[in-house]
Image (tube, rainbow, N blue to C red; front, top):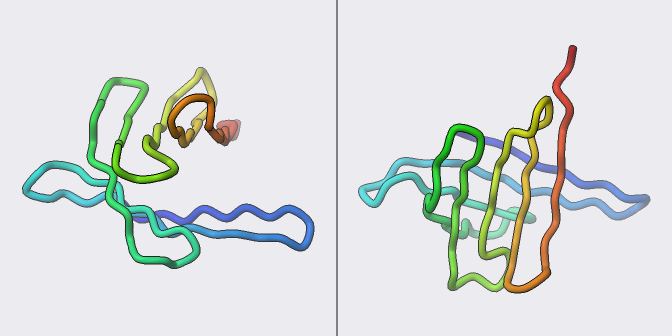
Length: 93
């Protein structure tokens, strides 16, 4: 899977390339914010409506989650403690 995320607030914008690849160790999410070298997050949970990738050695985020909530797809990044960011997208009718 290949993807791209972009945030824009006023004159400030950021982007991230991402991909999910299959390795000898299983599925790995590769995050490349701002075009930096990829940071790997290994698959740690797979359920019907939720997938979690984790890299406990990374500063932030340590976990990347994708969840289906009724008619929304949500992505969440988490660190230790309360640090988290979340984005949700509504399904088109």
